[in-house]
Image (cartoon, one colour):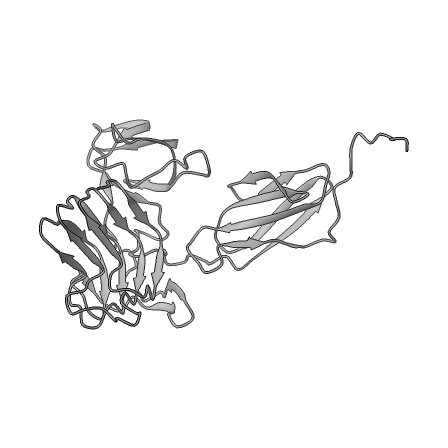
Length: 305
């Protein structure tokens, strides 16, 4: 009996079971902007009544939105299998080649067989996603406002940067605080909003895309570490959430914005880049762009034998 679990921006392929998610005796679960493929891929293959979601036994107020379902169990015609007392709201989902999603079309992944689930320029998922919630505050301006449902968003919980979101026509806003009791969100930059403005995750192009990846997203494939004196820089090849710099193998500094830099005066410096998007290798160790060497030591003193 749980509630308010949010599952967003994930990729699950060849899950090996008959179901993807099962909600029972629970409520208020939110699932959006994920890419799911071949549910029921395992030996059982999925029963005729199987679906991606099985919602039952009093599980209510659940939402599935802006997800891609592809190559799901061949014998299943329904993505959302409802049992006694179960309910789920679903809109702007895409399914292929079967399923009862709002959009039924080939998502046109870059290379499904090679596990590259970014989308091509001709994908029907582009600009086809719906808003996650809307502004409930009276029209105004500032950095703090209320929305219909705040559980879609997080502020990083003190561990990393908060979600990037859009509010109306303002895009790429960083969430710095969320009050889940009052559904109040604070963003890093002042904006002007209108009551009813759409709110969702930040996007590329002219509108949000269905699935885990925006068209134009780049998987993280490599990163280079270089230095000039005590200044260190990591240049990643691909979209990056943040970079952690290590001194003598111990985390020393984290940078969440490009260019990813740190000032480290001593020790052997290494770094790791963390991918922004779900991918098979989510952490990349930076290779040295210049000859590796420790930063010059400071405050040396002689210790007699």
